[in-house]
Amino acid sequence: MSADVTGPLFFESNLAIAAVALLIERLLGYPNGLQHWIGHPVEWMGKLIGWLDRFFNDPPTDRIRGVSALLMLLAITLAVTLPITHYLRSTESGWIVEALLASTLLSQKSLEDHVRAVADGLSTSLEEGREAVRHIVGRDPQRLDASGVAKGAIESLSENMSDGVTAPLFWLLIGGLPGIALYKAINTADSMIGHKTDQYFDFGWPAARLDDLVNLIPARMTGWVIAAAGALTGGTSGADAVRTMARDAPQHVSPNAGWPEAAMAGALGISLGGPRSYDGRKVDLAWMGNGRQKLAARDIKDALRLYNSGLNVLTALVVVGCVISWTV
Image 1 (cartoon, one colour):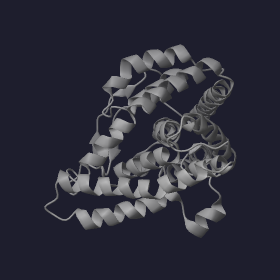
Image 2: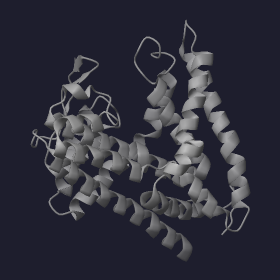
Image 3: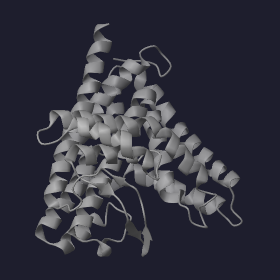
């Protein structure tokens, strides 16, 4: 299979690439040896963003500098990925290499591993649970009780299912390797500089708003995928996931994070969100779901079971798309 990056088979190629990339990353993740040897593509993006931050973000900072830095980041990302994609799409088996490269920008396995570590740690002791959750949440873990640790892990699983799986998959389907790379560059920029602090309030504003935009569709897709998984998984409810999304997702402070969080809460019959502490400062956030608030390690494991069902739904949709594209 070969297709030029502007040819009519571009989307059909993207479907096959996405299916293979999903399977590779879910089974193997990103090899530890490769991580130690050359690092991870997202780390490379982070180093570039750090350099752009130091170069452009000199006081007095403003949004124009932030736009300039963001445009340079996207231009460099395209300058690297477009020629690679053009070459690979001109060869018979290049799509397999593109799938391998794209798989490095998905996070199915690594997300599950990090969240499962919280469940395992919390099953042993509160301190081990706090230590594990420290790697996936921004709030102060030492202020969390066992329920807070479990809630933080499930919220992180929900939001990162969108940011780390559905959204990169969506942009891989739309734009191939350049599409998924651009998404990860934007998402990484938002996580590094899209903060409401004095240093980044203006400079990081373009990255934060663009990240909101590129996640609008994927976040809502993730909510519906979780709802579908809830209907297919024993002990969970797809209908409650839909009802909770419709009622609570618009109340979330983020235009996107509420959709997967509300769907997860509704499907599991629990409550997520609510007040929490960041750097010693209490923040009152809306509740997602009206179910049980006292959570434990077993609830994290239930969420992981639902997450894996959601991954099955996503993979099945992509594979069915491949079959349909090959037969019409």
